[in-house]
Length: 305
Image (cartoon, rainbow, N blue to C red; front, side):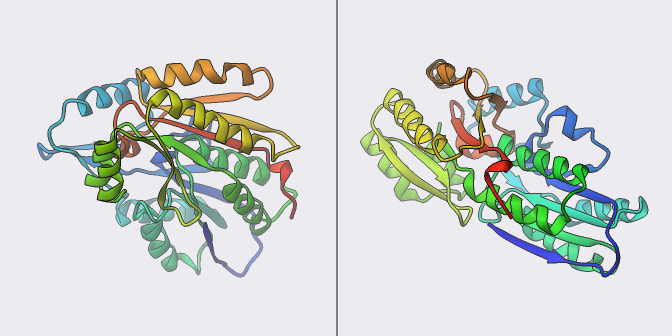
């Protein structure tokens, strides 16, 4: 994970947060007056375009369509024009500083577009950019923690970014991929990974590495063993945070695999809150239907400046 700071030389007071649509923000964050989003797009084979969304009905309908598509849709990052529009809005509203947190640059051009636009605002805004390793609930969690720390008013934004860097490094998303061919077609995985999975009937578990790229961490021959192994991986992660944590289960809609995994981890819910969410359409386009992701969300109190 990389952070970049473009600082305007004056007292900092009013702070905004920008993230991208893959965070699938809950309503409480999406409607917060200091939180802004830029939206990725899905370009369908018929020439139409769908804006990435967290609306449950729209997400479910998209996955039902994806299952029968002959041509994999292409996904694209928010345009620079959209980022400019948001930044201009922040200047007009009198913001002094902005924290931009995006989906990994190794998987999307979103961070690069935001970074490029930010260069033109150095005289008007102090811009802190985080090229995170997160998406979906974990990225929304970073936004939530950042907002809480900003509103508490005890730390500067630079100090908050430092804490968020530690949190981002600690969070690991493990994913059971529903369709390896989709990952390869979308340029997010090697042909060798798909060949291994298809020929040997292997169901891989992948994770987002520290450089933001996807890496295979386990090769399992049945999805039931996949679930058991992912549970073991996450239990190991859960022992590292004495100050507490939450769990996140992120799935495609109507996934039988997700239902099995949810039953498997139900025993943990009495000890750790479990957040549930749907894999955003832009991400699910590459993972395929019947994908499951799981993540440990450490409380920020586990990390010290």
